[in-house]
Length: 249
Image 1 (cartoon, rainbow, N blue to C red):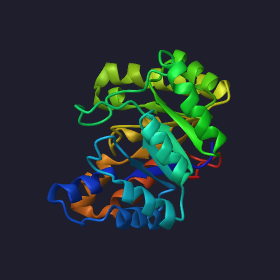
Image 2: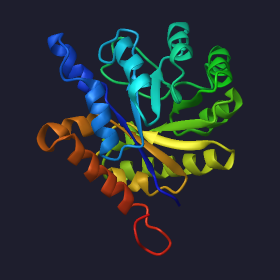
Image 3: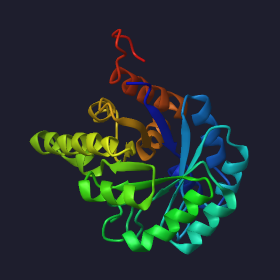
């Protein structure tokens, strides 16, 4: 199945920094620590209201990171202009509402196809790897492919919050979406709400190539340190992806 990549979202290091309005803790330091701990990429969401990551953070990350930067962004002209200025490795297009605490669901790729199309086209033409953050739904997978985005990130928030039979049902929905998306040529990622307790069933889905995890890792880092929190998540992901010989791959 191949090694499952881990993208570490550093937004909430910036949230803590911004609570005091100072310079610490520094998201750039967190990104470098994550890279040294085995992260395969760094994710940062530049929101319209700049509640955590700032424009300066994005500039520094783009200049100083040696691993890929994934810029999460709303589908707006402002954010497209910022992406085209910095040319990150990837851009993940997400829905965004000022009143939400965190991203509440996937973008309506099917219903907003015509609005999204010119933004996706500009990013793709600039050589940016575009990902659509969507619900695990065939309509949105088809729409993402039609938009020309080579990657989708399946929203795992509902699965992460569910229990027992409902969680099993939602896991099966994600499995089916991953299989279908891969069958139509999309690269499949997943993320939102993943923890040590619920990550392995998602990590075991063979079509998923990357998980993006942030809030939980930053929270655990308060108790054990960022490197240890990432190492533990990496170990669980590897345990869920046995090689053909039976050893972790």
